[in-house]
Length: 491
Image (cartoon, rainbow, N blue to C red):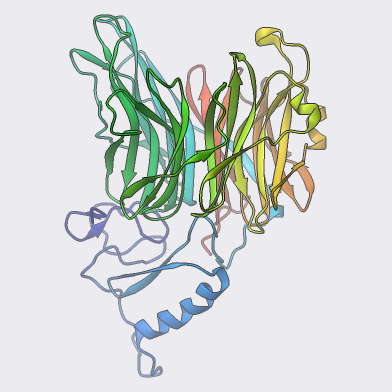
């Protein structure tokens, strides 16, 4: 496993995610061993207990395993570490409640200028936070090649340690511009169930430098992080050389167990939905049922409660891209089935979409998006917000009563913990953060000002009491951090 620094040290603490530095043997934050060979110091007096250290740890973790129903126990250097899964955040002594979420203080978090190509800009499209001191955000860095006068893209990964952002090195198909071809690589989503495993997905392409248009090779892009560095996997939709795959979204439940969705196209087929289940390092295709030949479907976000129950959302376009409707797909263990989540009134609108999805611990899933509320008039078309819940095979409208206070509010990002959801949106230059819990809505009173044309693509909340949202501005990527007044809790 490439999870260590050197031969025996972990780069990040396997328990809390804090950067281990270059020589520490134990985590400065929680004391967890960072090596395979060095054990944690034994208590000075062991004669008062007849239970072996390993047995004591096993017994103390038994209550945790029963409480959540599923956990992975990893034995590392004599210390038993409990890895919390994405589906069930776990039961730390501190419970991140809906009241805590309502009282978060939100602030903008500065992302340093990116090194490398000049005259470039960037945007972050997804973020995942297994702990408050370990968040991974992914996106795309755009720049113009002055020699070819062509626009190109490079994948971008940023890591947040709770106080600052650092750019992660990648060895992607085109980690740097090369003579004779221009990269058009991007990462659109990331999922980190633990600090030792992340999967980011997107697409890659090679453009001719002579025209800047001709695509020689393109396909799906997968970046996998296993505690030390990122490794690139190129995934094709099929063995046919003329079929290109593009991945849009990923949801992981534990290390080496993920679901990804995207699209594939070829000269014979304009665009079709694809999905892969990733288990133990192997991708297997999962079919879609009910896909219409007269529509162009795309799924931009996915959330899996477990590997047999997933919800993906996006858009279905008809005829022209000016006419589209919100689309949902449900996976229930065998295949994907497409759903229409809209009410009759929303279906009558010309344009709608679903932007994000997440699920509560009781099985209810929540989706957000937007719907046209007035006649289509190009960029001046008015839109209203969509909030839908999916429960026992039925859809229910959950539109917030607060949305009427902000004409044209756009719901952009959503993350649900065990009993509540946090929603981030934008209305012109006004940031809009809401908490949904127990069928009630609460508008956050503490939000910063934002620049015009700002958007947020993703939000993630860690179990210790911190939420991070990422997105874009005309001048570059933006990050928003919500913390408790007393700071995140370590449990």
